Length: 381
Image 1 (tube, one colour):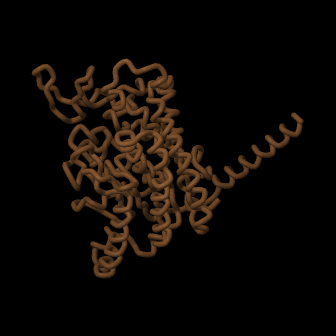
Image 2: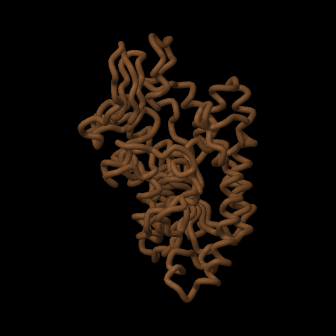
Image 3: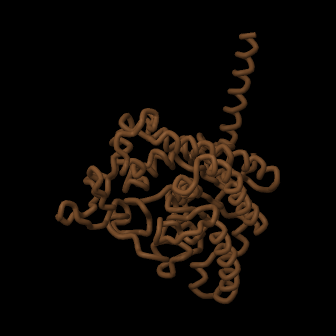
């Protein structure tokens, strides 16, 4: 029996190696554009344009000024653009200095998959839920197509997409974390668990709609280990035994994220059958981020729960880039000296260095289903 198990295991390994080698030698997809949907993990200026602009020291590590991103520099979507040799995405909501020739970004910080009945001024939840981002895409596609036909013989055409390229673009999703965050705030775990099928179905509906509009290549991130965000411990003292895991993350929150990801993956499997011409890649961002967090010191990073930007001492919290009073003294939420050794930038969002590490460990296909790099994401497996 042991002999046959060894034979089967060897055969399986050879099949996997053959599959990966065939992907590696295949020509890249040469996507002409990226259209992204998401929250602050991939927002390149949307919420900053719609509401109060993100201020310094955000953006200073790479852009040397605020760049509409909740990080000291680039996000994972920026590294995807680099890998595909495309420009960084302009936010759809940004009216100044934009270029949509190679795509657009509909993500906004605080976005959720399901609409939430609250304003951004209460808990930071964006009014631009995923369904609204899809409405914006439809409008973008129709209006840019019409405008291009009017200006195609002028220099203005160079800032507009080509109608025939929407079907060849890569459609990326990084959204769902805030649905869990709202759930932790408003629901019991059982209620949130019961809501998960509807949440993932709404994401699937967005993919289906884009497919009907001609989209064929989809790169879908699952949600990260939300229990490992340092903000979760800002107001917690003496946590009960078992509340935290061995890395200091809130165990129950991560378990819910894992359950959400399981439901998402199951739905994507069905979606592949429903959309026979689509190439849909499920990207396990959770494993990449948790792998980074659990090996932070070995990888040269500071403790995973340490925050680079902001003043967070005991129960006094001055957020990154803000001023506040602590014991009658004015305190500024400044950046640390070297953000590149921190995983958490501001307690909620990842640093550029962490984003790059996660991008490097997902874009190569080692944590995707099917196991293909982002450069091959147009291929149906």
